[in-house]
Amino acid sequence: MNTEYLSVKDAAGEEALCRAAEIIKNGGLVAIPTETVYGLGASALNDEAVERIFTVKGRPQDNPLIIHVHGSEALKMWCSEVPEAAYKLAEKFWPGPLTMVLKKKNCVPDRVTAGMDTVAVRCPDHPATLRIIELAGVPIAAPSANISGKPSPTSAEHVRHDIDGRVEAIVDGGECRVGLESTIIDLSVTPPRLLRPGGVSLEQLRDILGEVDVDAAVYRRLEAGERPKAPGMKYRHYSPRARVVILDGAVENVAAYVNAHRGERTAVLCFDGEEKLFDVPVCLSYGDPARPETLAEKLFACLRELDRDDIDEIYSRCPPKGGVGLAVYNRLSKAAGNTVIEV
Ligand code: TXA
Ligand code: MG
Image (cartoon, rainbow, N blue to C red):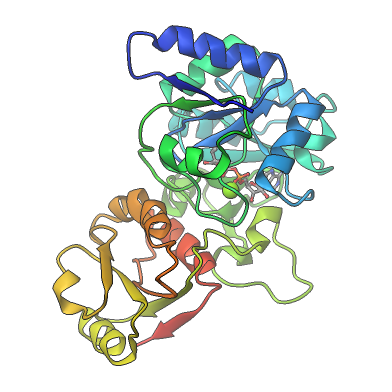
């Protein structure tokens, strides 16, 4: 299939958005930019199109999709019980990197929710995608636009690398501002439960909701038989080819450990200004730990850059676990198969 490239950065923007919306209305697949990561979108109301999303990504069938909507009015269209808290969160964080899980109405196809009685809903903060949703007139079901198991794409180039020729179109809306997938909060249970950390922090959610539980899958690998509430959290994820190891400790200890254990094919993910401490073939900084949003923004691009044949081991500095740092820690731990060494 010949994939169309639709750039929304120039004057032809509105025309490109109309084309993207038309493809979606006709049951096609379009990769769409959001502020978190690129999504692989299709009409949530078209079972065949949704089915193709799973095929193109190689996604397990039991992993439900998020539907992307234009604003909080959509909540009552697709969800059967909408607590006041949902509107409060929408008011504060939409459009933005927050997904809410709510009891679904029957009109939401089972194919989207993988048979669950809840649906995940998000209003993304990207003008191009908001316009596409509006023009298409349907909610857009979209997982991250990567091949399953790989880091999520934060640029149109990443998307092209993963799924060129397998979708009708890719909309290039520039680089993603947040860089990690949205926070997922389950409001169908009491107290609300954080299923996946993201750009909206646990602290921000607690400010509005009061008590919030945190799903065990956020911090650690689950034991055999344990099930996370977000089915996607059980899979190994975000992984380059190489083995990833998180080193938790002061920078001197991390450098000493790496320099004693490194091989010919070792890479390091460090923080800004630390590069010279590491005696390894490849060393990349993924940002400034005092500003964890910089780590979020660059993590996936760095993991993709290190996904090379000549690297088989990546040691990473451990991000701080507060604020957006928790999301960075969560994604990095998944990439590392939860291998954390305290040094
Ligand atoms: O930022 C994002 O959320 C991106 C952009 C494209 O919007 N999307 C994204 O989708 O990350 P995906 O499919 O890669 O991750 C969705 C996660 C999965 O872990 C899935 O299991 C969970 O959301 N999920 C979806 N529906 C759910 C539901 N009804 N209950 C619990 N978890 C759900
Ligand atoms: Mg994903």
